[in-house]
Image 1 (cartoon, one colour):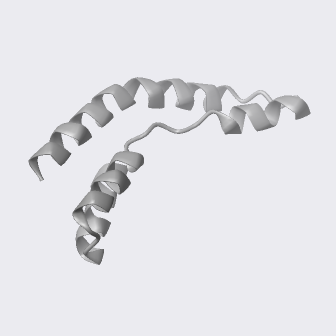
Image 2 (spheres, rainbow, N blue to C red):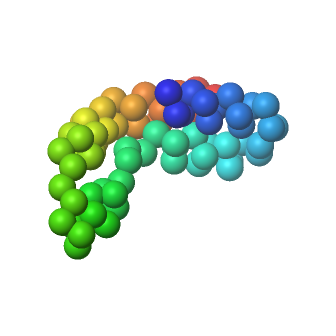
Image 3 (spheres, one colour):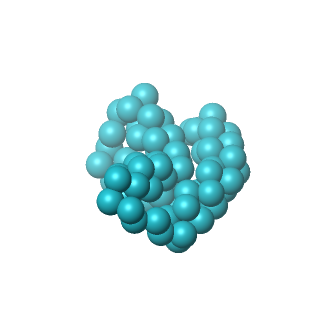
Length: 74
């Protein structure tokens, strides 16, 4: 959903094409692992954070590929 939202915003705000492609591609990148890493020193171990990270990484293969193909046609 984030790449589609980024595409809509880029179109609405009339962002230059080169920058628009970068913004849309960055929106397709999976979530980071910093949430898990910041909790470790405090003994926080949240299974849902790890599950979200794994799911996001797996789905990013499809999302990033589709976004790159989409950007090639714009």
